[in-house]
Image (cartoon, rainbow over all chains, first blue to last red; front, side, top):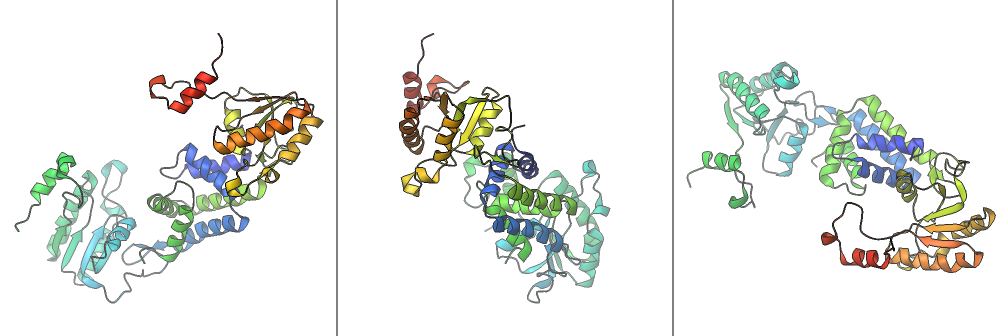
Amino acid sequence: MYFTPPLAKLIEEFQRFPGVGPKSAQRMAFYVLGMSSESVKGFAHALLDAKERVKNCSICFHLSAENPCEICTNDRRDKTIMCVVAESRDVIALERSREYKGSYHVLTGLISPLDGKGPDQLSIRELLNRIVADGVTEAILAINPTIEGDVTVLYLTRIIKPLGCKISRIAFGLPVGADLEYADDVTLARAMEGRREI
Amino acid sequence: MYFTPPLAKLIEEFQRFPGVGPKSAQRMAFYVLGMSSESVKGFAHALLDAKERVKNCSICFHLSAENPCEICTNDRRDKTIMCVVAESRDVIALERSREYKGSYHVLTGLISPLDGKGPDQLSIRELLNRIVADGVTEAILAINPTIEGDVTVLYLTRIIKPLGCKISRIAFGLPVGADLEYADDVTLARAMEGRREI
């Protein structure tokens, strides 16, 4: 027994987070002890508050403290273009680029038979309903080029096509600022495949 | 505004921790949203509990939920040998080696004029009182070989020597498992300086 019990417990709690090993957990726990009581209370409150108030939007399933979320209630967003993503954090990443002005739909995961995750566990029924109700003309699939991603894209294409909605998938290729010489084979193959006439 | 306010607040809180950048903070905040409500409550409770209950031991200044701490109240520890360290985490590191069976004294810092930290801000008076009261025969200074560490060691040596107590400092040299070829100059110089006849 090296750590006094409440400290050991706190280190254990920090260690459950992704990317936090025993050393970082220990450093974070000691940091908590060095914080003022008010700061620790503020942190604890922020945790409970976020967990209690942030829920999936009932329309697009994006995580938000509002329901419907800030994006769904924004009248300046084009409802006829819909970007379909796996997770809420993908919405954040796309919003950060300030490029896209349409709506979103968060699938809350990808089809993954190995993890027992089928289309029924995703928000696909709601997606189809929205495409029809909002008169969506283009569905942009912003889904990672992994096995689960590709399977999900295939599945979605098959069921969205009959609705008469255009489907596209974001481009994969050389990241901006990267060097051709150091790109991996799969990325280069995708970049060649996705070449465009200029 | 990419994140819904309670989520933005939580990310901001995580980002204050040492070694946690914006990306890790975001990942940790999303992880919280994915935890069960009970788990989040448990984590918040662990934070408040650790902050409230873990204090500096009134004898040795080690962080503990008990006062006096588990080490000070352990009768099997040799009170006549005292290991002097800068921080509570150094006690943990030394305890982990299972080598040392004496008592500890945590200075709660090092002398650092640049940070406005003089001997008065450290638990040095308490250290001297303990050396006299417990009849300490050897004070082992387990203090890092930094400028602040060296200054503190010099200061402590000057005021502990008159009490008739033997003083030693832990050895600095090549870490076990390391390769001579890759050791830095200062470490090698310290290792040569600290050589022992075999």
